[in-house]
Image (tube, rainbow, N blue to C red; front, side, top):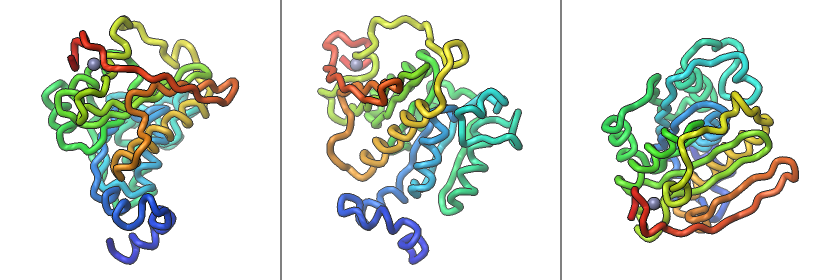
Length: 246
Ligand SMILES: [Zn+2]
């Protein structure tokens, strides 16, 4: 790390759990972020500010005025701009020392697999079950840690899938019986800070994984209740009959 980086990341380096060694891991890390909406906005901004060396952003959608109520990586000057591109501009304005690569389209299995393989951590910030299941399946195949988040109305949820340890459960183990229907924010609404809390927590888990810290939410479903401003935690196990990871 050069002098400028040592100064810039000083408040991380002061933490004994991070130190220079941890910050070097963060600066060398590559994170793949799927979706630059309400969850991806704070997740990407905190990872960029933290100095994650390379961010790969995937989103096929464009910025709409109704997104600005919660998708804080975008702004009024970038309406109709692709969300990955809009986010790239904001993230590089925040931290010019990082690299940001964008994909303004949905990636098919083989492309997504290549980017997952090359990532240290994947953040699923998408808003639909089909993408979540696709990302889970590929992260399981490639044994790359996945931080999965979701939020709607006043409720959020968060979990970490880490199949570097084969006994850990995957997303499919948790949602085997759930159909393809989505509880979308566009139809049900969402209170802005709820997506902020979940997306920020995704960045926190990603940094803990990169720095190899303990107490990552692997096998734990964290449920956020915004009305009470309270988290609950449910443990879940690997499903022996899971279609994806058994
Ligand atoms: Zn599974």
